[in-house]
Image (cartoon, rainbow, N blue to C red; front, top):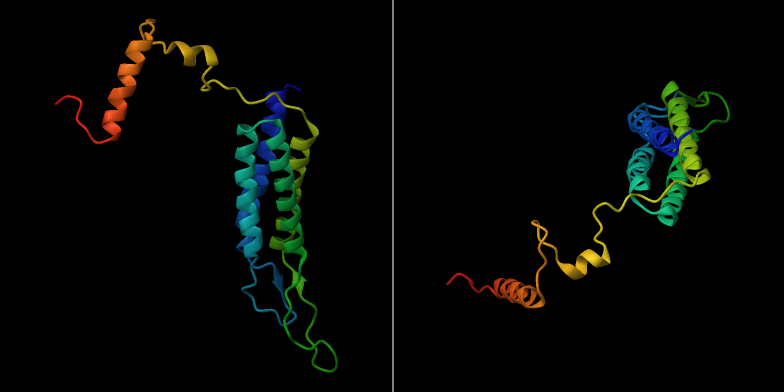
Length: 179
């Protein structure tokens, strides 16, 4: 498989998992057992945003930073799984007569677990591969920086470059170079 398609699959997995986690985190994830019906997971929502941001970041950074971002995205995926599996404390007594039934996870909680696992899987795929560094198409080469090429192919002389620099410095001081 080509590195570009591997990247697409890995990043697409993280984006899909983040989108599903963002949707499922706002839904009720436990019911019964004296738990209020509006129990959502704001931590999972924040971690889904971290996963989405990390998916974009791995495409833009170099190899070392890509690995660091992938570890962060992996931690976000694991955090989503843990927050989906946690059962909120209700404060209700579960001993004796009249005890409430244990809280049950809804389908949204299991969808949130799957989304966290997708994010973690995509992060592991990023960690497992060596992709080429991102293109430096907008980075200036040292040779181009030294010659100060003009669009027509002409070069600025040292005197012209100094004059242009003085004009910019005059503008920075608030002086009008046309006056």
